Image (cartoon, rainbow, N blue to C red; front, top):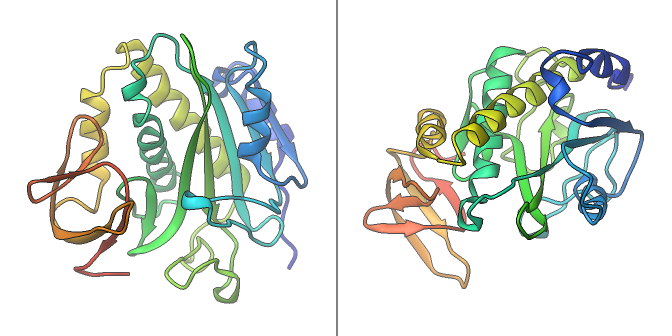
Length: 264
């Protein structure tokens, strides 16, 4: 298939004095093993901050629980962002992937104009099917910990190319597939959310409210497979101020969650 490359020049021109000036570096490569792994390695240099790496193809991309995340070249958005969070309480770091989920949803709603929402903790759904996934990794600890957050969006994939049966893509949804425009929108939304969070002293009140508004998991019956094999079912009633999903009277901090009502 004749898939257009990401236009790095458009991104760089947008970063001159616009919202993308938040980033110290935006780089597009043709192929790599994993954009997350590449930026984790760079984080050893304490001067490295606010870097973006995009790959037209990932050959060893990873999702949650070390699941593979691969696609045909130029069919997805595969990007990672490295940021440092000075003076943050380490227990609050878990909000960064949730913030990223909010940014991705808002970018999708604004740019291709699709009705995306979130499945806890940070999968992006379209019509109940997985459109995007997010994976964050702590790359360095200390007074200003570095975190790399990876984002994978299914853009120009046909049915036979989907990574899992319950996935979808912008192409299948009949939406616009200008990856450069969507990358710019995602980076713009992330920069705005991150800047507001930092200015708030890493307080999560406003961020938590924004997440709840976009989370389709709240209010429906779910099944959560927890680490260790335990399974919890019930109605997801809320996301608490630490980012945990409340299922009945149980607070879940990690696990695979399935929506049972309207399950995809």
